[in-house]
Image (tube, rainbow, N blue to C red; front, side, top):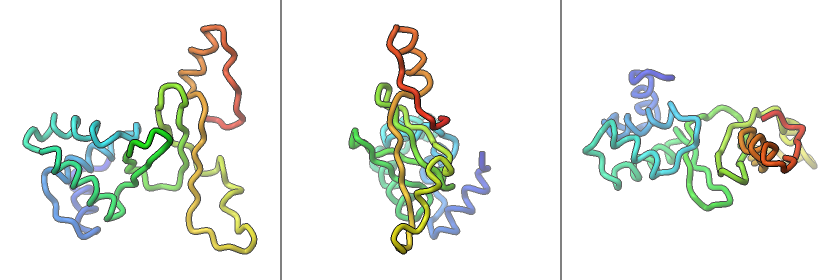
Length: 152
């Protein structure tokens, strides 16, 4: 996990002032692998900075996304989630528990080719199915979980 000094530097490099709420939100997101919603970020930030208002947390999330420090993700449930992992990757959404997991970029590598001579600037792939935990539960309950060649 990045230190507060590194996170502060990243904020400044992206033209943002370093404030306690900004630092707390970015820290929360940098430490999370769960792709939290705004409400989840707010709850985590309020444990560290009880004076941070809901409006402040939401404004910080939008400013971080606008600055390119986090990505806003919206899946089938229409709930915005936040991801501070800016390395190339895709996502897997469990259709049962709604957990969102990172998937290695190479899982959909052929999609990054130049189809029809177009210049592809970004590719976003979302895999959907049962996460490993839900698949085990389904198998234990007697239902055969669908198998996928994707190693998630």
